[in-house]
Image (cartoon, rainbow, N blue to C red; front, side, top):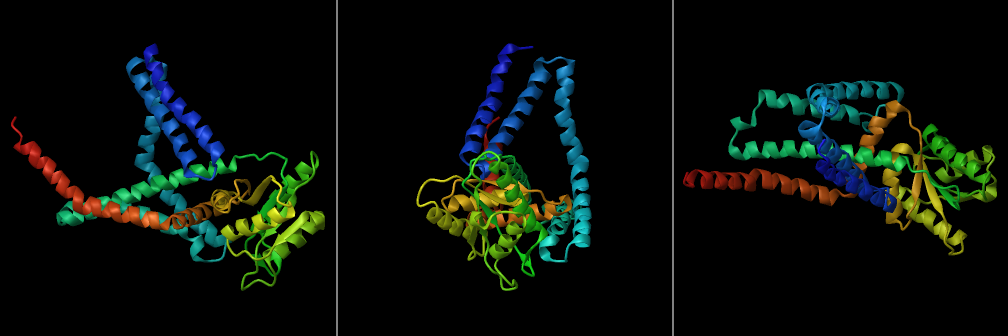
Length: 358
């Protein structure tokens, strides 16, 4: 074993230390997840090179496992993923009402299927050069956003493994749709998560106040905050430990208006706070919390597995919408560069190579 090669392992170690710093600074960001991926990928790459050039048979066997996994995924994984998306769509439509938000996995499956099948029948090279390069640019964008979605999921998982300390002054419970003045199962899980934290902290310190945040929708008989208050009282939470915010109609307003209530209730003194929502919603809620001036973490209630894929895709679309202008600009620049500028650059390089003396 070449000990000099061990110096290269400082690269993934550096990324790992950088990850801990970024994660501590802001959990609701893609940055920490991306840095963690860099640490993992660089470690695997360095370990593979180390094993190939200097390792023994055991190291080479172990290093071949990630490579074999990649080969298998490239060969069969995408098709298995597409099959899973179709199956998930069937399960969701079987258990939930039919709506656009419940068939996002179907759209993804069909899109990936077309992405794999169309090039087998229509090759971009059969079209004019502009169309050929435009098609390749579009393919590149699709691959980029699939990788981007992967980073989003990693960041979402990282947000959910956070464990806030039991020294909170407030817990914001983010509202969602209610039915006939009563909390729905999804909202009940958010409430149960907050109440469980409340009871755990109560055993150690003064329990936090629950800030129940949610306004009244056009098809609701009362505000979401009022429905949550009724539910909390039924679970044995004293009314004096409940603060109601009944004006918000979005997650951003949940955070902004709840902050105003907590600032007033605390008398302007510093306070500790977290928020409670469903696990798929923790990451995006954290973004809105920071936009509202709240540097706080969240706790996520479990979600039925069959419901998660659609929920994650919906959250990802919402995340893209937050940065919509940047994404539109990125797509347009990529398509213009790939279809108009890149061909000229390629032709210029080829001309220089062919005209240079041998």
